[in-house]
Image (cartoon, rainbow, N blue to C red; front, side, top):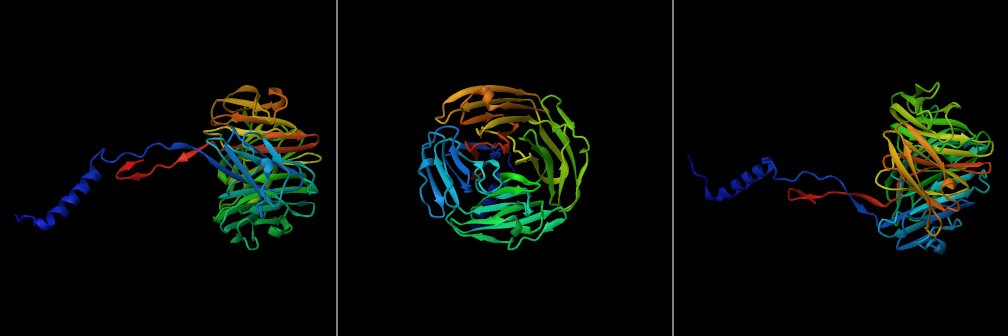
Length: 444
């Protein structure tokens, strides 16, 4: 047998070691479970509409906050104190708030009556950066016209893609393939400019480059009366939970199937007293490929209940509640995992907690504008049921409430005289998943 030449010995040995490292158990460390890191800086942008006040707050007091109007960058000093809940009238095209503080959970909301735009009550979260946002039930006809607002709060150019669907199929959006926004620019697009003559549109906003936030103001004086603000709804899915449905209103479910196969949807009611049951006539709702469908919700779905959707194909969904004077859109909810949600108090404010998947222990704590606790209520919600409570039953004089319902879903519904609104609750930015990084065969 020939001996290995010395000049080949080291490369062969190195190759052998590489093989051993690859095959020997325990040499490389398995990927660890995800960890969380405290969020120290949060930014959000609130589009400006007449009559809608910007409210800024947090779960715990922050260190510092700055607020500027776009596009001119003028300071908004009323929103600069990170230790209290504060508010300001709309300025410019939008207001961007940036807050620092370890796990302060900074949040912002729009609330008020939309002046000269239906005069209805609107309560909505100020949006953060859009990745893939869906807006349902938009109008593009006389007496019901939506306004889509896109804002670039960043320092670089932003590009988004717009797509739209109607009851008869996908609609071509003019210049929708690559709509460009300069730094600080806001773009307001009427529903009639997206697809004129359509009374029921679903619009998708997909970010391609840069940063952008998006929101929609719905208003009308015809079949849709009053006004409401939608912020980014979740992408279509096969399962969804919707709540925050006001009382005393006609309710309709708007479903969008953007895919290429027919979606069969089972609609169940999740109630406080009767548990979960399939809504009459809604055990098999079909939505044709690439279309939008609107269905009446039977009267047995009580106020404060939730809807659960189980579909064979991904669908986007909202519940539209129409009272004699106002409209409220209730979007699909995200589960409250790893953190609290925040509810602004506006008029008669009620919170619904939904235990769709398992028994749930929830807590609701009410605070004043100085962030002093006014009262706490514990809720035990059995699996397959929902539970509602008025903020005023917990404490009077509250400015906001903090809801903790790990693994559950929650929404708020509002009434101010004859005006109504709905707000899906999402986790405040207290912490975030920290990525694991691997080098040298080990995860760090």
